[in-house]
Length: 541
Ligand code: NAP
Image (cartoon, rainbow, N blue to C red):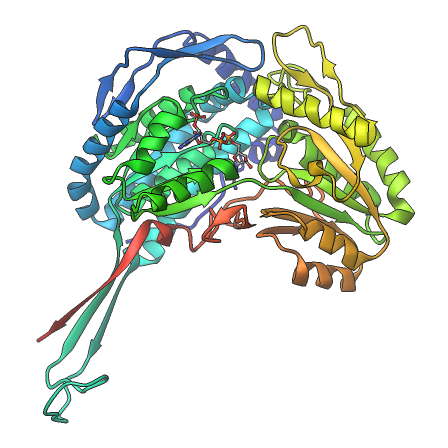
């Protein structure tokens, strides 16, 4: 079999480097106009390859301006059970399909995603309120995940290993630990899929995380029931497109089932149902840990691959390139309105440069255009939901009453029926509740420090440990940071973003502490193993 080298999609970079940025914009704008024509339609769920309708529907609206994107099914526990049954029925044949064929089907899937990339990105911008750069970058990431996992499966030859022990002439009268065998022993050590996986996705990376988690489960031989975010932050149309693209690539009916409906019902059925062998989830810590406690509390043996929230810190030392730090922190804190698990939410700045840093950061934040993210020049679109707006307003009130509001904090009237807010910069005490709670809105906490070790301790003093960043040219500080920071994804002196924007195949994206269960990242050499269990089969001839 010819080896295929992994390469990133890097769509925007490739258009710009070949002098075709206008073409990039034209393709995105054309896709926006074309996907709009599909909006407002009624969509089924897909179970066992068949259309299924529920008695109630969910209306999905764009956070940009309230445009109705579509009517989707309000699936129930019963629909989840039907889908689990369909996935169970498909499991035997799918798990027996050779790894090379599975890898090849997923490579086809990556090509199908790639051929629809502008259409999918345009829908994503409508559903999430993301800019074109964020959306195309996310679709690229989805394609990268699929190709990367197909490569990993092949490089590891389907995770099959053979060992043997030659026959021995030493005779023993009875067996004991390490007893030599008079016959040759051949052993096959293999990784075996578990069965049916429930895939539960968050709203904020509904293409890349959904595609990555689903591919991880399926390419290793499991079958899937996939539930996109369906409550107050809805991403059901990109979820449906994922279903359609996988079908187009030839993933057999029943291997990937698409069920829409509330997490508290459809997702909870995955947790309590004995026929679901594993759950792969990305979302908040409350829901992630709640699912695990519930399943084990019920005495159910399930495998969990769980990625959760963050409260990511950056340290800006007196030895930093200040302009780089300002630009990296501003992008990481306010890009996609801070609605990234990897967003910077705390920054610790050396006292000697703190006022200068804040002043430059405010200038940078002020320069970000806020409005309709379909407009090329807009950096910050709308918040995803009323809940997010409430979190933002509460945080601003708390900062005003027990800290300092340094910039922003207001809702903006863009003339659109959406929830637009300013990026906010606040200063609060180190023990303030805002320092520990994940907010998931564009509110950045700034604090000063005197001693570098204290700054590292403050950075670590939260339950989460997803991403972290440092701006410093000092070798001692860099080493101290690397050796003591408690986070899985760590960046030093990164100009484009302090803590966001992991690239498949370059970084691995992984959380420590309360940000993850298992400590293995996505886009990692160790990702696929989480979806299989090991088995040793010994044959003595
Ligand atoms: P969320 O509220 O936890 O929801 C995530 C998913 O869980 C949704 O599909 C939701 O369904 C479902 N769900 C809700 N209650 C459930 C229950 N009782 N049982 C089973 N499933 C249930 O998170 P979100 O607001 O969508 O996403 C933001 C969070 O995800 C943040 O905390 C962020 O840090 C985290 N995140 C982490 C990573 C990472 O890689 N570590 C990446 C992205 C996001 P419905 O919405 O349909 O009800």
